[in-house]
Length: 371
Image (cartoon, rainbow, N blue to C red; front, side, top):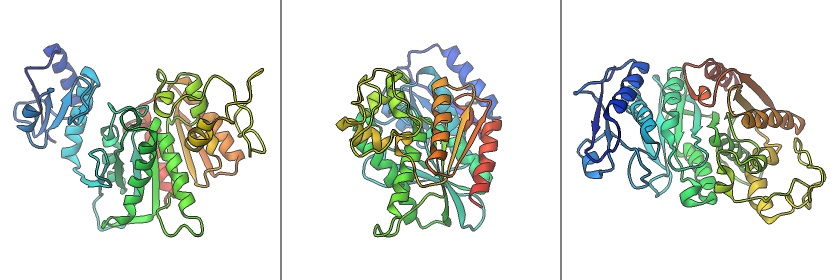
């Protein structure tokens, strides 16, 4: 197992003992040791010159820094994620593949042992669409999936706080389509797209887009055999109205306004699972913003998606996410989609923790669906 070395720059303003405690705790959880000659290196600093002295290291900036660090803007807790990324990179290194010209347009391909072809799980990270969160959130699942015989495609994308919603939506779809062009032993008939938190919304929306691509006249393309929401944000309208994660939905997509849902022109019935507010004006679904953005992006309002789905939710998570998941699963079934709902004990991150029962059950369900 790789040992871990932490390099703390002189510019870092943090309690040294606390940094030591965080690093030791995470190393113990990963069954590695903290030492001066570790193979897995983390550089904690805002200084790119210092980070550049350690090729292959994970560069962590405790502060927000949109210009280079692997992980930034998560404070002292970011050291936990940096140690995980450094260790997982050593345990199961992947291949970085670009699908665009921007530095955030890439994915990391992890292959299991054996000649293949391997079934694929494409992973879309969450973080409430904010740039301080990245693909490292899904590193542990990449390792776990490879140990289960899957290829893992860990997707990074431009986040809307810096690049706008259209860039985010396009990147996720384009990053998934890039799979079809790889020269790798992949079974493209057995592809699952799984997203965590905000990534759950992105994964389900992208799976629906890929399903639409498969319609007659659209030519060949990649399709998802299964779409998986891991504690996903599946109702963007209520997510905005309830000010989820301090206004994350509105920050990413824009405001839908205070009015409750009515009927939009062209809708013959209210979207399944959406109940009207007493006395509300019927302006929400008639708004240009809803029809151009929310109606396309919100999984609940996109139904039916036309793809098999697995909706996974921890009971100890944010109660609004539990509400979204339950209502969404019911609505998707009523709309005619093939949906399995899995709710077990666990918090928001248990669903991406390989040691958690809820993830282990999820992984078995994915395997069964891709047989």
